[in-house]
Image 1: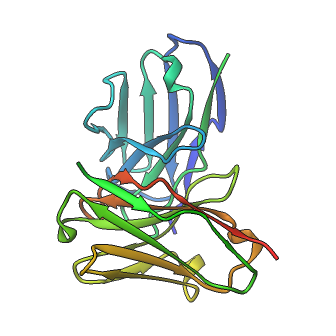
Image 2: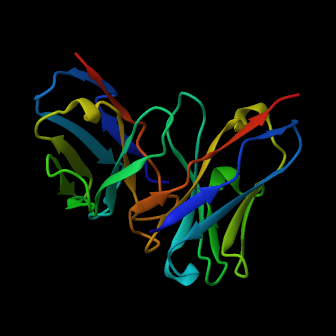
Length: 107
Length: 119
């Protein structure tokens, strides 16, 4: 199975901050990398697919980059509604594993 | 408007089985794949498997092989996830979620079904 490792596991930031979360795959996954946002009690929401394609309806403050084994999710200016847990997921080969999550908290 | 609708909470005893239904509407049954993802309370997301509703073909995570079965009923556009030999560690929210292609991002999620395993 492909292991997905996110860092950091949690971070504290202020509204307006630029935030970057990284995700590393244990082997090359080309650009088969998706990012999700989850708030407490809710289902995950797809933000980015294919490493850098913004899902319809998602603010342009979110962006994704990377290929191969190293990927990043950047929020250019953190908004109050962005405080959540973020997960990466590889869809290169089954099982489609998730990272352990990164919790973004208010400083 | 695509919707993925799941059933309400279930309570099961250890050793029992649970069969969770999931109905996707607003799109043709044959034009997407359905994933099952679970989340133990306070923990991360865990991918369980995928079903192609058109062919019925499935792929399961090794961790659940032998205990999970995903099926579909084309007459009602419903898919099912059955997990057997339940143990307390299977207490989780089970999500059904749709993707356009097998390797695409999962774009529509159900609200989740909480399965509680307790004696």
